[in-house]
Image (tube, rainbow, N blue to C red; front, side, top):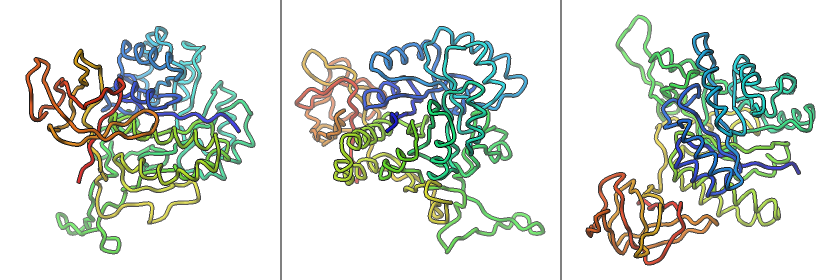
Length: 408
């Protein structure tokens, strides 16, 4: 069995630390420029240094996305950016553009190069091409089946790594190379500014009847014709491992700490259980299903892994997430009275029951016994986002522990 890496997204320093604490083997992040998630918080050079130091102290790697399709005017800035990265101990760069690959080889020769899924890596010839250019790893196109990935594995060098998505949002365009956003809004998805028009509601206009909007229906279920379900392969780890995949990648650099904690912890436990015993993995399947459904999602699909997608892979009647839990905050420290100190993210009140997500996979239901603000004044509720609060749960919790509340 090849080593199996769990690769988790992080859009901020807080989320990076959450991913590490909840079981990531590696985390991928974006800088303030040249990545494909311009609307994520992203990392300054100083934040990268702090985040990478924290990750490395905990045995976790950090990969940096530089995966735009560069235009001429981008190249000088990328060279300057790579010069700055010489002060950052990043483990790998995720790149899609061949010109950027060559700059990375020249300016950061000791940093691994991973080829982004944006490069449309669909066959073993492409893998070997990138390998001969010095790439350590290639991320498979999402349009590949497990059978195709298995064939790639058989035809590439043994020391070359395959990274494949295992969970998260799917894109309706070929491996993410979408032009709709640029066409409609002037914001280029391939420059990191996608407006996600695949989630919009569409109608048809007949050429000779302008302004008359005709509904698009699929068995009267609605009009969201591009809206894919989310990928989830928690039930198919054996098949993913058998295909020869080295790194299981979670999508979502725009996601919250609650989302990251939920997916990281669930997949961590599933991978560890399977490596300990396939029977243990099968016994705990209901736990994985229940836990993975506690993060926001758009129903689930297996994508292209078992063949081409069909109408069952799409959601036609809405573009909203299923959301069963609300993120309340994270334990930052314990004060001198033993109360939890946190930065509140959503409202909660004294007397409410909340859930603490322990790092080992257990969930602990706790009552909010008391709330104080930073001045020590008692409060009945916490209505103001990002307010520092001291909360009495009747027991201590580990720093970094995520708190959530079940809705409904």
